[in-house]
Amino acid sequence: MVLISPEGTRIIGTLEKLSGRGEIDLGSIRANPQGGFTFEYEGTTEVFWDGQETEVWDGERVFLDADGNEFTENTLRLVPEDSITEAAESTPVIVVTMEGGVIHSVDGIPAGVTIRTIDLDVEGVEPERLVTLDDGQPALITEYAAEPTPKPPNHKPGPV
Image 1 (cartoon, rainbow, N blue to C red):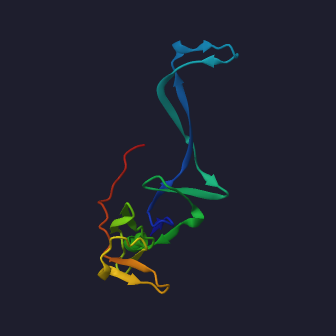
Image 2: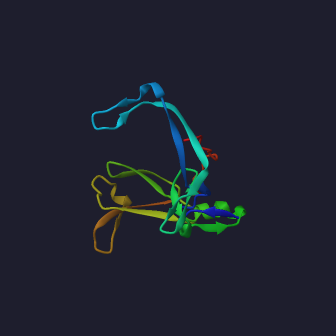
């Protein structure tokens, strides 16, 4: 079984709170006029792993997907691992590319879904491509249907 976010992405971990000690360059410590100190960090931090705690928002643990998006526990779904493809596609993202009011491409259309655009700006459109709407207004109707856009190979982000 795997956890899936509301966006259909696989959950890979929890958001954690850590504490640590940022090492100070001991030769850089100076008093400042406000009564405090100024200093420079050495550049390393010792992380206190024994104090690690999972982040909780309003009583719900916080989980992360591979892109670092945060989701509370009550928004996640548990699904069989072999259904991960179907679960990820249950919330499709459809990308419509436009330039100057003209659609140039539509990507990410799931199989069986049709995207219909109705363009009321018909100046310069060939008369044979126009459709008259119920209200008598001319329009250019374009429909897009395609197989799902291939997903890029799995990307494993490096350390942040």
